[in-house]
Image (cartoon, rainbow, N blue to C red; front, side, top):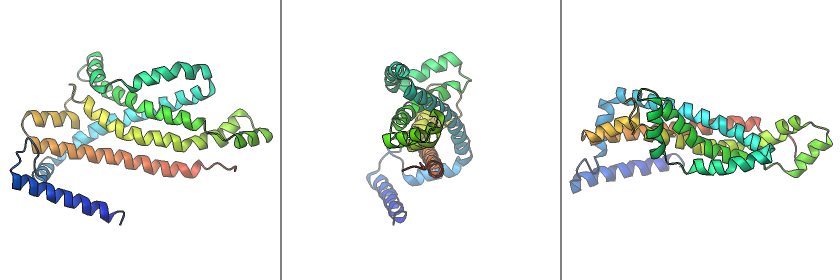
Amino acid sequence: MRIVAPLVLGAAALVLWEVAVRALGIQPYLLPAPSAILAQLQATLGGIVQAALATGRNALLGLLLGALVGVVVAALASRLRWLDQVVAPLVAAIAVVPIVALAPVLQTMYGATSEMPRIVVVAIASFVPVFITTLRGLRQVRPVHRDLMRAYGASGWQATRVVTLPGAVPFVFAGLTIASSVAVISAIVAEYFGGLQNGLGSRIASAAAQSGYPRAWAYVVASIVLGLVFYAVTLLAERTASRWARIPVS
């Protein structure tokens, strides 16, 4: 039922959508019919796949970069109080930076033929949730676990490896789960502001500008699928890592 119920609900929503568009005579520029979107998906499948790969590459590289920096900075901030006090306001400032303001500036800096502005935008957007959740996870060590490791004469690195890092893994993946969706959205939005016309965002803008509204929605559907792929892969990686991250003390 967990699988069938959402599928039935989605199918019913598509049927109602199709009926409403036909019965009410809704114009394509307002809302195209699912059948028109499906026809465009079939007609431009090759271009959609290429655009999804381009956007997915930027999203993946930016996600990995932002997550890596987030974990490293969080690990340092959890050990150095002065660094935590310095980084905290900077992270708060980064969290409120609008992508629509940052993307054009980076596009001007790196040039119209570079993918780096989009990767940097994704990295900045992914950094914040990973940093916040990782830092919280590194601070969640139970005192009894810390005292037990100290009683066993464990070194600081041993305590970190056996207790702190495994305990923080669920928090790291909580941030990655959020960042995986944010990465795709950020990559698509960054493509609206010039540069190479090879991604889903630029294709959506181009199709809408040419009044190809069903085609634009076809690229939107591809964007949704790409976001779901990133989310599913993150969940799979979390399940794999959770088997390794079991704390062997109680």
